[in-house]
Each structure stands twice: as structure tokens, then as C-alpha cells.
Length: 139
Image (cartoon, rainbow, N blue to C red; front, side):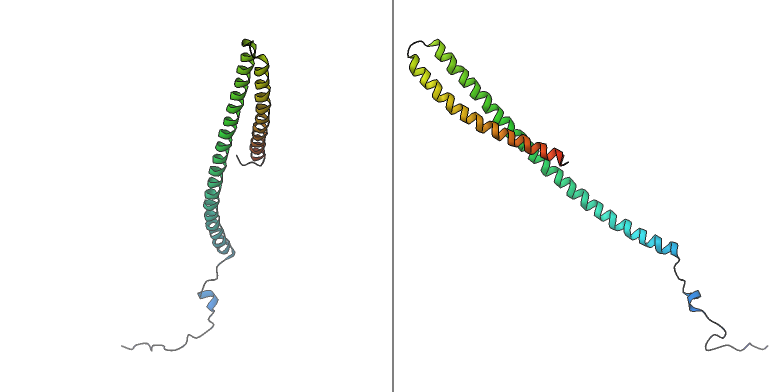
């Protein structure tokens, strides 16, 4: 029984390394790039969602504070108006000391008008701020 001689050494004939080590095709390269972009977009999306959620929370908090301030200003305006009406009533009811009451009324009236103007300006500023926030799309 004869054995065939074993070959040792280099492979004879043409040998193309590129055929053995497969070169990725265009489709696979595109898929790799797309997978990488999807991964990056996913991480950016979660970060942007967190930032957006934080921004919405801050804006909502600011909106609530402004609404509370406006409500407080309007409450004080109502109180001032009621107080002025009471003074006017006191003037009509009390005939005695009419001059004193008129002076007291006019003094308080001018003080309240000043307060009223300041409060209305604050209210208008708050409303303008809210309007600009809505216009900027922050809600």
C-alpha cells in the first residue's frame, strides 16, 4: 500500500487573498452606517426628550407662578375697589363731618389709584410675559 506524499509548504497556483477574506459589500456598509446612526439618534432622542421634559416642567412652573401672581394682583384690585365703595358709602351715610370724610376719601382714593395703577401694570407685564411664552411655543 502506497501512501501519497504529503505536501508541505506554500500552496501552488494563484491565490487571491481578497477572495478568502471577504470584502463587505455596499449593502453591508450601508447597513452598518445605518445601525450606527440609529444608535446615535436613539441616544440623542432620549437626551432631547429629557431636556424637553425638563423645559416643559420649568415653563409649567413659571406659568403657575405667573398665574398665581396675576390672581393675587386681581384679588388686591377687588379689595381696593370694595374698600373705595365702602368709603363712598360712609361719605353718603355720615352727614356729620362731611368735609373730614371727603378729605379722607380723596386721600385714600389717590393712594388706591396709585396702588391700582402699579398693580395693573404688574398684571399687564405678567400677561405680556405669558403671551410671549405662548407665542414662542414654550407651552
